[in-house]
Length: 166
Image 1 (cartoon, rainbow, N blue to C red):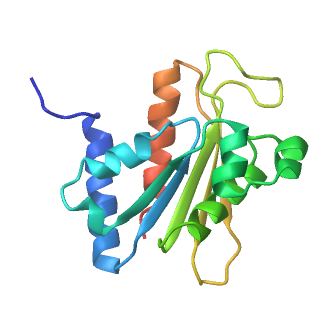
Image 2: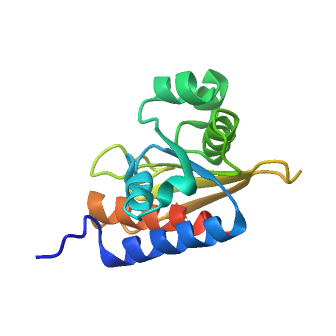
């Protein structure tokens, strides 16, 4: 029996993220909703990850997004929690409340319920903000095949880890 907590492709990618950010002298933070801490869990599976991972925020409810990351009620009411605007605000809030150089945020509809015509199950938004680089936050909306809740969360975790690569 393997002692691996997560699938090999996630563990291998997490190791690449830690190694690359360590080499670049960067600290990272994550703000997670639909992944529920899987990105932070993947990173902390890597020995020595404390040099790179500053902290992780699991902000599953709208209230936690507002309280922990300063996402405005106006953003949630106007665009919804599963929106690039919300993911940007989550990433900016995570960066402001951490000592990290880069923040990635994830919010989505993992299912099996909760989807709408505009945001069906499998819709996941991502944002990345880098401290002090003067650029706008980067955001992306992806639609994963709604095969299963686990598959959507796994795919979202992989995408978030890729966004943490320098």
